[in-house]
Amino acid sequence: MKSNIELIFEKGNENYQPNFIPKMDIKEVDINKILSKNLQRKDLPIPNIPEIEIIRHFIKLSNKNYGVDTGIYPLGSCTMKYNPKVNEDIARLPGIANIHPLQEENKGCLELIYQLSKLLEEITGMDGFTLQPAAGAHGELAGLLIMKKYFESKGIKKKKIVVPDSAHGTNPASAKMAGFSIIEIKSNKNGEVPLDQLEFAMHEGDVAGIMLTNPNTLGIFDREIKEITRIVHENGGLCYYDGANLNPMLGICRPRDMGFDIVHLNLHKTFSTPHGGGGPGSGPIGVVNELIPFLPKPCLISTEQGIVCQENNDKSIGRIKAFWGNFGVIVRAYAYILALGAEGLKKVGQIAVLNANYLRTQLQKKYYLPFNRICQHEFVLSDKDMPNEVTTEDIAKRILDYGIYAPTIYFPLIVSGALMIEPTETESKHSLDYFVYVMNKIYEEAKENPEIIKKAPLNMPIKRLDAVQAARNPILHD
Ligand SMILES: *Cc1c(COP(=O)(O)O)cnc(C)c1O
Image (cartoon, rainbow, N blue to C red; front, top):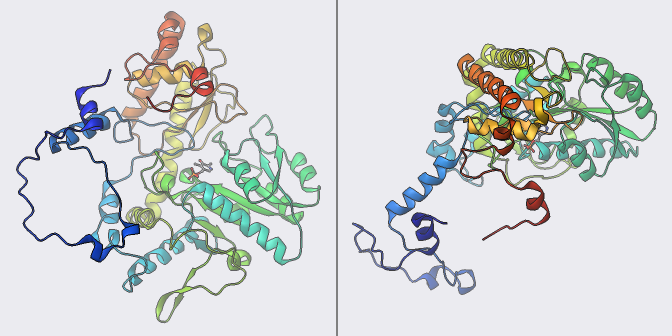
């Protein structure tokens, strides 16, 4: 049954009178003089509701929401860390928020974009950057199109990309979209890329290179990374680094030094933009000198007249986003990096790793840890050995009852019943300890009272959904 407020919002009520708002006392303009008929809307069905009811409606909805401002959000591979509010204030300064990219006075903004590229070059070790891609997956696509164009420009046909089975799901999807077919490599028992299999795959001949995340989605740093990139290069390939979750590497290790040629970063994960729910993101890509001519157009270059925009580059893969990308995200990342400085960024990396290893060592006392070694920003548990056949889904649902967002579940696919936990560097010891307390409590419940867990969540506005029905027979509206 719907509450009154929801009903009011949907229906409105023509009897409501707007309170206190005086009648308009300026002359109404003749709309036909400004807009031609074909651009005018016939009607706009806005419900007639007093302001107080609208406010209550949205506040009520927002109270049902959960975010990193509400509590710990250990969603592996998503880096749901706290983003300082000062970066929000800066992105909302009128001169930044209200500027139009076609305005003449946008020099300061172009300068900011250019300066952020320089900082990202320093952080990753790459030679050139574009900030145009709107998300990690968009950066991957752009990076792979660059790879393709690079080989085409040399008159070489390359059709395949090597992707380890520990990769993020977007990697094979982007490779496919860029027109490559995928050679999947199975991780070895340490969660790393087996060199002999990589060598074997590269010998297929028409392999453009490898896409790799390091640390991978198990949170494991591949100790043979220099050897991996060497093998790929030796066989005429390029190395693509998925740097979506760069946190643990910040100030400690650079993709370029590992031997990579192309890297994408997720500014909305690592560099302080709140994300989730499909909001604007940014997935800049950095490349080595040889690939700079292939970057998307337009490029920004520094001249004596200041930063200018260069359009005439015929090797470029072309334009991949309107104007300069999601500028607000770029501003937040710039403010964040300048505020932290080199030392601060290094600390981010160290604490991201420390927090994850603290949780790992606490939780592995009860939960099964398939890859038992020091992790980076995240680690993966599984429901193997859980009492009374309690599953990963049960655990994730029960966590919600304790006021915590659930970890990523059933991913990566190489661990059956995976629970992928990433605490991030912004959680305090107090909040990590609460998470451990909840996980231990759930383990005890699994032993003593599994029925509670199998029915969970019990305290949420929506109870356990019938996932099979929802997939087979989706009801998308009521
Ligand atoms: C999140 C993520 C991506 C994709 O980024 P989007 O912005 O969601 O497109 C790619 N790789 C890894 C490792 C990620 O964690």
